[in-house]
Image (cartoon, rainbow, N blue to C red; front, top):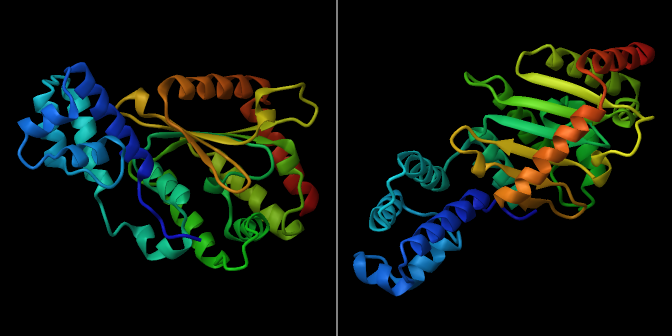
Length: 287
């Protein structure tokens, strides 16, 4: 795997917002470069295209030049620049084993307030046990150089977002086929189902099951994850799972489509109590 490239999703969003503000101010690249010391046209182009970290001072200078008076937006964009330039985060020691998508996901989970996730084939990573995660990672990674144990460690460390002082709110809808699968054998699967039962008891975690007999539903299009952020809803992003790589959906109008899709999936799934009953029943059957 390639080394992690850093929080590229946030850099692109920051750059796109700064570009919109410049265009609203009616300024060209050359006019901005002439107005600000140390801001060349190539540098501004790199910032707006999200290529590399953006300095906080540059963000402040640009927004001042663009006469942006939205204090909430200014605070958010400055925060994005700060986060985008951070180094030495816990996962950096695993950077040789983390691709850019996973690096983005870890960074975004650290600052997100909510995650909405539909999975059709397996239990979501934030709810997996080490043994279950090990089996899934081994099967889904076809490359011989993958360090499975390093990726298991990373997946377990990500779960701290659910127990931090201001924990992530997780709403997961899992297809019944994943609940009744035999990943790792009865012992591994029973432990995983017990973990789901325990996690579902936490106030910040909701788990629903999409029943096998459900009619056509929006989850049939595949797994996806919506990450929500407290500052501004238009900063929410979606990760769509793919075979060789995952796709980030960043445009607000497209994210809204996935949000509506998740609401429809949630409505078609079993209720929380019935979902817990199915998980418990399956756990009891194999223990």
